[in-house]
Image 1 (cartoon, rainbow, N blue to C red):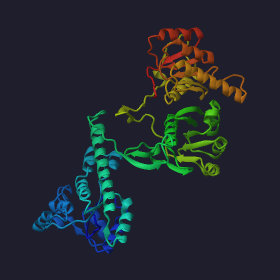
Image 2 (image 1 turned 90 degrees about the vertical axis):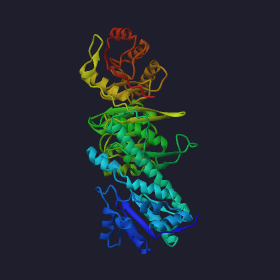
Image 3 (image 1 turned 60 degrees about the vertical axis):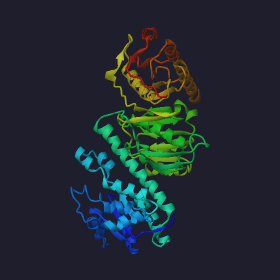
Image 4 (image 1 turned 135 degrees about the vertical axis):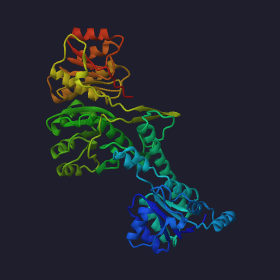
Length: 529
């Protein structure tokens, strides 16, 4: 495949960034510019000579611009195989001129949905002519260049400057691949909106999930695995989709996975007091609230300072200098915050490997949405766990009701347990985790491991007793036997929060009563696999 000189270009863009510069570069090469509507006006306002699409087609734009490029003189000029005699004859017979370059980006459908537009406006922002031209040009990339991303304008300009106004087959093929990816993403967004938002169909017959590559990663969970970060079209505010990395090494697959876990948990407290979450291997190893961030950090660290080494930290307040100083005393991989003051940035600047991520906000923990996980030969799709429990929804099932402080600690522990791998046991006292047991095959072992960590913390910090004494304990699912509860009793817990629903609930309640515990049922579980 040889180089193809660009003599006529059709430009029709929603995003006008870089348009004038590109049009000027093309005009300087003697390229005829054909355009539509607002694109033509922008080019003319810059002093460029532009031919209207209606002049090319000899047919007026109509129906509020819905019909303007859907014409044989457009698509014939794009689809004609230039070295095919029959195609050439058809072009001659019908007055169809070749179009060598198509520069199109599509109506802002995603942005229209995101701003909360009414249905008629959303429908009007479904592009028809644009994708049609893009697909025609991309199919005929042997002869036609198609560019859909303003980020590629500089590459196009460099290409034609290097090749004396022409483009190479390699460039056209690369742009064609991007073009089909762009139209596929666009159609996927529209299909998703129709199914989920417009018709409320949670599990449609077919799902199309549009993701765009955010960045390549060094490797996956292990060095022999390859990985990249992909971002959805509709990302929640405050998520890693729009993060700013202020400093530090490139983020890895594991960094991002852990940072997401930390952000999702700290977001549960976005309207609460200063809160710090420390995560290791996607499990929280310390969570605490306080009057200040530094108080919360110190309390969270004391839950399991061993696991916190090399961990990920997320905070629900702008990061300040004193907290950054405290964090910098322990090796930390990533710190996530809505923002950070100059003092905090200066502290972390001395730690060149530490990644500081600013999200600008925190995601809404109550937001809807779907969770997708692949399995061998398929995928599992479910609504995300946005379940929330308030004190009014709890049911006291023991003879003793929890005190006000116990109730607060129960709800705190329950919130943390939601983000701990099952089987999950979380002890909490005075707004801080006292011990966390995660991912065990039975609930009793999780209770014992969490208590063990609390005893180790007491030894480390010289406390008279572990913080599990007088604590509240949360279980992400019901206690199937009393043994898990007995382990919590041995650890010194005085209150329990759990879903309930076991066939042995009566046995577990009786055990709690015998030990003098207060127990509340949520009626909701939080398995996290």
